[in-house]
Length: 208
Image 1 (cartoon, rainbow, N blue to C red):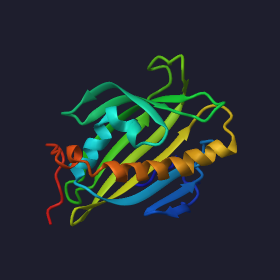
Image 2: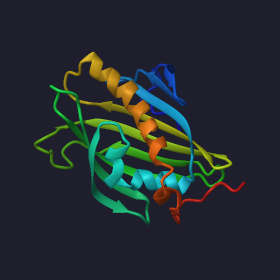
Image 3: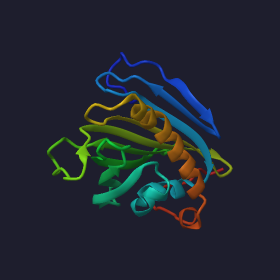
């Protein structure tokens, strides 16, 4: 589930940050201009609550770092699939970026691990937005591993080609600050009643 490499030459994960219960690792990825990241924390939540949070696109700017808006292009709850356009705030003077992602929610029957897997759609499949630079490639995964006693290990994995010449400071923000601040934001909001009372028919909780 944690393998996001495009080839055998990818480097090993290196711990980049360990603070406030959040760990962030990075590693170089063949064919990508910036490193991939993996971030992990533990939260008190149901699995349905976490999936509901991810699917609550109207509230994403409240907790996902530098995400301006998510536009839902299509969603099929029966098939647990979606296509979204995500707008991301890049520091001045860089232009803001967007990307169109096709995603799917799945769950392992035995371990009850839930994976939300997103992959960028081919360039040209969806028209560009005049106010944003379209990122040509992005991969993002959420992995929710139930630990029992109401706790879930949350893993966020991502890599992207942001397009254009990106200064080192912005690269550091993307691969270090973004996953760290996003998981901090998730921990602050996941306890809300609207998520913890949610029960999704396609998601089964770990039986203790």
